[in-house]
Image (cartoon, rainbow, N blue to C red; front, side, top):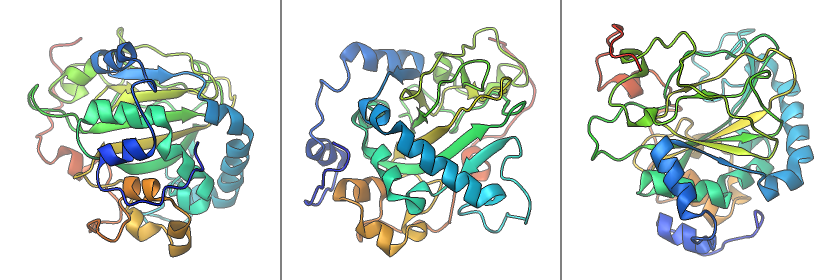
Length: 304
C-alpha cells in the first residue's frame, strides 16, 4: 500500500483521494463524527505501522544519536546556538524525509488523509513531520493549541496533527493530555483556564505502539512528564489547508535526490511540484504568525 507508485499528475485533494483509492470504508461515519464533535480521534493498531515498527524505531534512534542537540533545529539555523537543545527536556528531529525516504510513507496513511479531509474540508498539504520523545523526568508542557483560534463558527478549521506512536504511551511515560471539545472555543486557552496546571476536564488516553492520535489543531492539549523513563517515540504529522504556510519549507529543504524518490501523491502533499508556489520563509513557528491576528490577554476568565 505505502510503496505503490503513482505516476499521474495530481492537482487536487479529490484527485489524491481517488489515486490512493480511498473511500468511505477507510473510516466509519461514526468515527468521523466523533472527531468532529470531540476534536480528537484514535486510530488503533494501524497495520502498516505494526508491520514496520522495528524499522522506524531503528531509524529514529540512529538519527537521534547522530544529530544530538542539533535535532529539531532544521530550518531554524538563524536561531541555533552550538550546544543548545531545541527542547532540553526532549529528543527532537525535523526534516525526517530528507534523513530517510522511509518517513515519506507516513504522509499517505489512508486514515490520516481521511481525517484531514473531514476537518479541513478544503485542499490539503503536509506542513510538518517532526519527531519528539520526552526524556525521563521531563516533557511536561503548558496547555496550548497548535493554531490560532477561530473567530466564528462558520470559519473553517485549519488542519490536524497526527501523532504517530512507536511505543506504548500512558500517563507514566509522557502521553499527550487533551481537553475534549475545546477546539470549539473562540479564543486562546489562557483566556479561559490556567494553562500551567492540570485541568479537571482533561484526559490522558492510553496509546499503544502502532496507534495514531488525531487532533484538530484547535484542540487544547499538552505533553506530560515522562515519570517512568520508558521510551515514548512519536512523530507528529501536521496537515493544513493548502493556502497556509508550512512549518518547514519542503521545496527548499528536500534535496533533488530525495524529491526524485517521491511519488506524485507525496509530491502533491508536500507541495514540491514545479507549479507549487515557493514559500518565502524557511519555517513558520507558533509565535508571530499564529498570534498576529489576536491581542493576547493574560487575564484568565470564564474557567472551564
